[in-house]
Structures are given as structure tokens and as C-alpha cells.
Image (cartoon, rainbow, N blue to C red):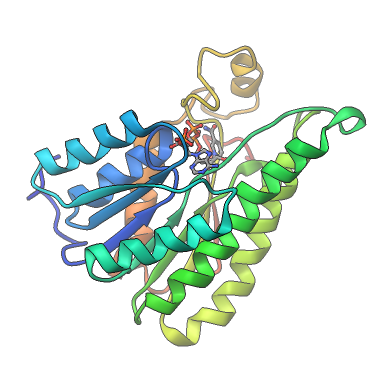
Length: 251
Ligand SMILES: NC(=O)c1ccc[n+]([C@@H]2O[C@H](COP(=O)([O-])OP(=O)(O)OC[C@H]3O[C@@H](n4cnc5c(N)ncnc54)[C@H](OP(=O)(O)O)[C@@H]3O)[C@@H](O)[C@H]2O)c1
């Protein structure tokens, strides 16, 4: 898609956390292709973050990358404020950065537990709290949760499911808090999507496919298209929603 193909997000500024790879990189590219200026965060993959930014700029868009480990609340706050300061405002926040650690409850480590809570829950709270100060009516907050919020068909995903359940509930309450300000808050709950976190040729992929109506992994581009819709003015009536995009994982 070229920069001129769709201009629904012209003049908007978006921050996509964890935008250097996977689903987040696809979201950043899609929002930029619709005209938004886009900041992305990452914690370690600076080369990949630079490539995402370069690709957006090559298409005539505005983009920047910010190193901000989601485990560091101050870094997350700074990333939100830097986006608003450098790009002029903040209209769309996409909480995409996420961590996965799998293990049976019997021996799940406290370190992994705290990391998943920090990245998947606390960073989302911090980013939203900071971002809403900058947002005007029409603001959009979109979190990337997981189908595992509601469906956990295999052992070992309990803590990951806990964190994704937390952001689903958080979404409902936030819609009530921020609705009066004209800001919508929604949560997309993907099923298996082919990324480094969950490769379609990985050890668990055939098991995952067996739970899906389509039998096919999704793509970051498919998730990004739903983000772009929720970010648009057309989606003003959708808030507090937990929306599955999961190939029928929950059918
Ligand atoms: N793939 C799936 O099947 C699937 C399904 C349902 C939900 N999800 C959710 O979708 C989101 C994106 O997942 P993905 O599959 O695209 O994952 P991914 O391929 O592992 O990419 C994760 C992205 O988040 C960034 N990130 C990770 N930890 C971070 C941290 N502590 N601070 C800042 N950035 C961080 C990574 O950059 P760095 O490496 O630089 O940190 C990268 O840009 C996550 O919230 C995940 O839980 C994924």
C-alpha cells in the first residue's frame, strides 16, 4: 500500500509499543500507511526498530524509534511524553509490547511471573495513564491482549493467560473512565499469529492449529487491519470491547 492509498489517519500521532518486530511492526507500518506519524518502542532490537522507521520514511511518512523497556515504568512514561513532544500530539496508543513465558504452576519462577506482570500489565497501565493526559476527544487506546484471556487449551500458559485476562477487564473499566472524554479503549485478542514469539513452524504450532477453525496461523498484517479500523473515526461507537481475531480458536 502506498502512502496515498488511504488517508484516514492523516494528522494523527500514534505510539506503538513493541513496534520493532512481529505484530507491532505490522501495526506501525499500517498506521503510517494511513497517514499517522508513528513512534515505536523496543527494548533490545534496535536494528529492527531502525528498519521499521526507515521503511515508513521511505514511503513518505513520519516515524521515530524509542528504546523503552516495558519493565521500566519511568521509561514507558518517558516514551509517551517523548512521542507527544517530538511528533506534536498523541491520538492513538497501541499497547502491543508483550512477553511470553510458559511453564507449569508447580515450578513457574517468580522472575518470569514478575516479568510477565511488568510487561503485559503494569506497562499497559502506565502508558495509558500517561497517554490520556495528552489525548483529546477522538483519542484511541488499543491493547493487544490474547485469546488466552478466555481459552487456555494446553497446560503451561496460566500466568500468560492471567496477564491477558487482566488487560481484558482493564479495558472495560477504562472505557467507563475515558468515555466521557471521547476516548475509546479496546482490546484485540489474537489467536496464533506467525511471529518470533509463536512461529508457525515452531514446536507447538501443529497443536495450536488443531484448535483453530481455519487451521491457519494469522499474520501481523491481519491484526494491524483491525487496529487501523479501531483507530479510525468510523470506530467511535466501539469501546470497552474485547475483540477476537483468532482463526476461530474460540468458535
Ligand atoms: N504471536 C502470537 O501468536 C500472539 C497471539 C496473541 C497475542 N499476542 C500478543 O501480541 C503482542 C505482540 O506479540 P508478537 O507475537 O508480535 O511478539 P514478538 O514477535 O516477540 O515481538 C514483540 C515485540 O515487543 C517488543 N518487546 C518485547 N519485550 C519488550 C519490553 N520489555 N519492552 C519493550 N518492548 C518489548 C519486542 O522488541 P524487543 O525485542 O526490542 O524488546 C518486539 O518489538 C504481544 O502482546 C503478545 O502477547 C501474540
